[in-house]
Image (tube, rainbow, N blue to C red; front, side, top):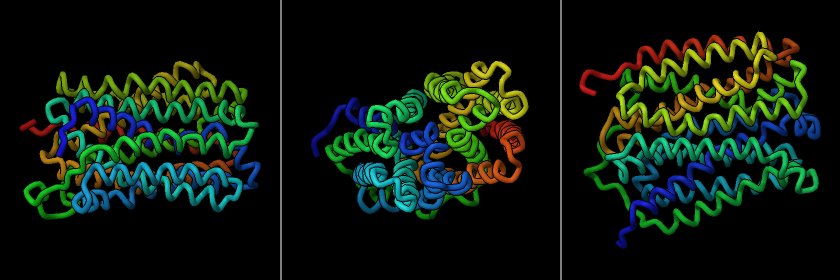
Length: 385
């Protein structure tokens, strides 16, 4: 097998990570318009965000099994192909069944790729986990921010056709897939494949999963409804979209910085707690006083939620040792975490329809962020760390 330098796996990791979020975040600036064009309720249109997250939860346990059968690299390449197919399906997105079906295909690709990326990091970068996870999280945030920031301009550039603006994001997924197909495939041997399934009986795994579930639910709910909340509060559509873009872009330095700090100073549980408290305060402002320094609120909220996400990705890497074990812990975190969090965008949309506004649903999100802070307090490292 021809060896590759460390730079090639790193580039592959970055390109794959960039493609794990645009399919979801690209909908946020356009979601009210799409709902209007297709005559869909907010509860139903929120399925375009909720279904990928649900698939990311339900299908994550398949990842270690597929890695055992065909290898990490080939499985991730296949998943990137699924993501590209899902985004190309949005060319026919004016048929609401196709639009919602594309969300299922998208979620399938992300669901299987996610746990395996952590195993890939453990295999190739075991001595630089914090820094590499920082780049991984940063790349994912870049992809998410790009989807949020550029989808509306792309739609305008394509003759104001939002289906073309959404389908554009298939191109970087195809590019990443081609690079992953060139990586040498490697299957896990029996020595690297301890018996047993996901670590359902591990209390630490459940603490990590609970924290991940809340922060993921917060992020995907904001990716769906933040623009609508600010627009309802009296801000223009342009201003509301700019605030959402700020929320996404500010996560870029946070996604890189916090995993590095966690490894450098061994303070990951302190950083998790700071993220939880900051998210609680900012969501309280979005709910009760959305026009009170909204730019500062979005800066802090973006830093907190992006940072808590990247720190969540680090946690399984410190709990177990082999790439496959890391993939299993990550698969449980994603399976149960996304399974619990996927309902939040739907409930917020239904809550808005029932209450006539976003204030009460966002107060519920504030209470959940407080729960995230409590879990962060419980995630102190083991004495052996």
